[in-house]
Image (tube, rainbow, N blue to C red):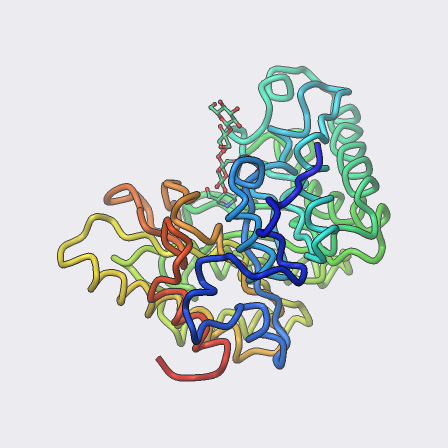
Length: 360
Ligand code: G3I
């Protein structure tokens, strides 16, 4: 199935019918970032692209980088031990390529059991069989999109949140292959597409220079020292208004990672309100402050080469429980820069100002 923008919604020369067009001084985010340059992106949902022409139109206008939110995960790609279902992924990759959007592939290897298909967890495999399963997955997926997916989150969330536990979290791939699963996944991905940039993607817990971030740093420093083909680290940055990231700490964490010779991508930025106290207008201004903090920190380090929000409109938002800050105090809402009618919220204006290098 190909996605065709509704006539008049197409931005190729036609009148721009997107809601932001009504905002006289609004400039597409992707254009504001060009002088730096930093790629400005968003996670994209298959169902939103299918059902909502305004979603597609805004996406093309505002962003130059997209991350399929779920379509490239094992849970979607792998209905069985030998079967692949590339249906959704192909739709999103083809849409992105057709509209000159670069793609972040997310994610080849997520070790946590709850994100893996039941048939994999229920199976009984020798270490050799497990190794073949992961190798063939990485080779098939990266190979299919060779030259079309610019970078991959090769391994996602491998580090445990609990400082009392071993650095690497328990999970299917660690149990099956031991700690080497990480090096192997990167090596297989690099062999499948030597041009693709390969990232380790994770989230901190609390302070961006706290224990978990230290452990992530330790993990990627080891990969670099062993000359594993890693090119960057994805900092997810799922934030909540109740505990905003400290700007100096975030900058320091980005800086130490780039001193390893790695790029940094902000990969999943969102800022959840939690039904806190005070008028919504005040909370939205505070939310804008957090978006500005993260965008400024990204802009101020030349090795931070992408800023990706985990969606862009509250019409198609998430209510994921934000593990970053421990037990959620409520369901995060209003997380994204544009509202349900695709109008820029204070958060979108704050990102725009920070991309232009202007203070809030
Ligand atoms: O598509 C199926 C649908 O057919 C079915 O009816 C429905 C009910 O079972 O499930 C749907 O799949 C869900 C999918 O989101 C699409 O909505 C999965 O169950 C659900 O687990 C999945 O959640 C995603 C989650 O990762 C787990 O993969 C979230 O959308 C996605 O935002 C979230 O994103 C993660 C990043 O990948 C990694 N970093 C943290 C981030 C937030 O948790």
